[in-house]
Image (spheres, one colour):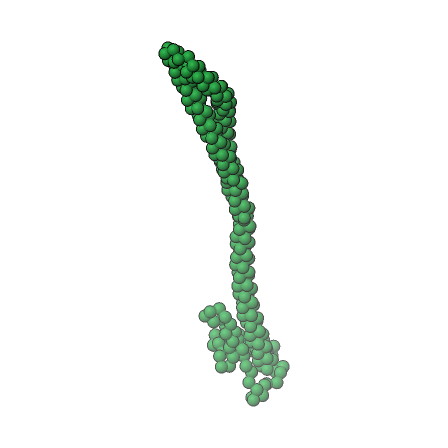
Amino acid sequence: MLDQARRDMQAGLIANREKAVQAITQKNRLQQMLEEKRAQSNQLEGQATMALKQGNRELASQFMREKINNDAIIGQLQTSFDQAAASVEQVKIAIKRQEEEVRKKTAEALAMKAQWKNAQIQNSIAKALDGLTFENQFESFGAAAEKIRMAQSEASARQEMQGESIQGKIMAMQDKAKDYEADAALEQLEQKLGMKAATPPTTQTQTVSVASGANGQAAPTGPGTSDPGVTSEAEKQLEELEKRLQGGSGSGS
């Protein structure tokens, strides 16, 4: 829009300059005709003077009549020339003012165009800044970090629970094995005291004990997998108990 307005101003200035050139051309033509007529009047007056000097008054009168007609034309040309000269001066002033106005408007148009481009750049920058989401990105980063921390905590908790579960199972197995051993020892004691009939030969009491393996896990033991240490310790305790019982019965008798 600004470029079109500037082109329109330039076109108007060019058209006015062309009209000014035509007006100046007409003024110059009138000036040339005026000078020719003045020269012609001077020539006619000189011819009339020469005729008078030669005594030819009639010829001199003829030259003077032509000079008078020519002077009348000179008067008309002078009036037209004066008007044309005044018009040309006014046109020159108008053209000069128009040129100044065109330069001023052109400078304003260039400044407005620069402002328009600057405004577009500012709008582009503002839109680009509006599209940036640093806070959301930071929040996403924080959320991801928190999620990782929660996953690590959950993994640690699961490992802890798994360890406690395994240990609990091992302890439960050990407690159960001890119960089996205690029941077997009590049964043997009752048999020796005559408080309970002996177990038929076909029935074989199985003793199950739990021993910790090299990796900390429970290892069940039975007749096929009896622990010699546990069995010998139980036998020793039973023998000591028998001796105390025998000593007590002998002293009573």
